[in-house]
Amino acid sequence: MNEAIKNRYEFVYLFDVKNGNPNGDPDAGNAPRQDYETGKGLVTDVCLKRKIRNYVDITKNNQAPYEIHVREGAFLSEHHKRAHLAIENETIQMIIPEDLVAELKAFEAYPDGIVFSNKDGERPCLVLSLAGLEETGKKAKALKEKSKQADAENTKLISPAAKAKLRELFIDSKEKKAAQWMCKNFFDVRTFGAVMSTGDMRCGQIRGPVQFGFAESIDSIVGKEISMSRTAAVSVDDPDQKGLGARKSIVPYGLYRVHGYISAHLSSQTNFSEDDLEMLLSALMNMFDQDPAAARTGMHAQKLIVFKHDSKLGNAPAHKLFDLVKAGKNCGDAPPRSFADYDVTVGDAPAGVALTEMI
Image (tube, rainbow, N blue to C red):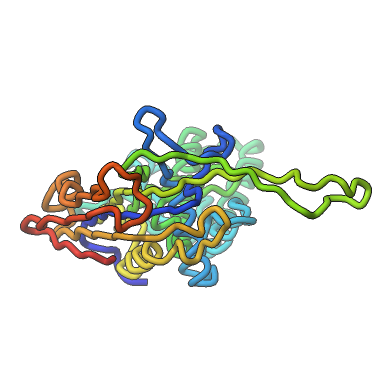
């Protein structure tokens, strides 16, 4: 894997739908999502991320380092177990409070090979393998049994408070190690982040560097419900049960706009790389072509404008960059029915920001 990206990015993404349902609302009978005050259509960020995941899954065959964590038919906890098994023989480095250092050094139950790092400018830390921790537990238990027979042995036992603190530090460090493994192998974890703090083998919570807002249509939409009938009967026991078809909700036409953010700071934590960025942009440009469904055959990516900052923190406010991209209909009072019914203009980017029209 390449190094994490060094620049902040934003992007404006325009896509449209014709005679389809871009994102059904389960609270409204799967009708197209809509802001009922403005009449504008909505598509959630979760819906868009699902399509990106599907595209990466198809193109990369669900192989590391492009596996998909949130995937249809997958059990998330099984991925967490894989992470813990993978790091079983690795070492865990725990930064510990200085007041525990002396007590830990005096604890005879710890195995050989422990390294206490206390260099200038560094906090004390304990380097311990997972296998070593299990051995430590066995020795500690043996010492505890022995201490029942000789009070002198109590001096060799770590205090309950210190033991609880050490366990807390270890669990936290182990989760971070497992989270690093998840980021390394799963594209959607290092891209969008994930909550993996459930179950017995936890991998913590990760904030992803790539985030979307809700997509909103440029103009108000009119959701239509269409009735359909069938000619085939369901059962031989009731051959007259024909014509009871389903109902389909569609948008005759809608042009949607969504804003995206890519944080270089968070990218360094998940190691979201330039290769990952290239994959993300490829997904945005091509994902609708790989997501066929009766309700979405009329969806297409129309514009992708990417802003690349010269620095990690950025050189201009994101909302000012978004304002450079303007879209408005050119068909007068007639309802828009295609992308040609809109004009899209893009202004000049300020100093320190490079603008690229990918589509």
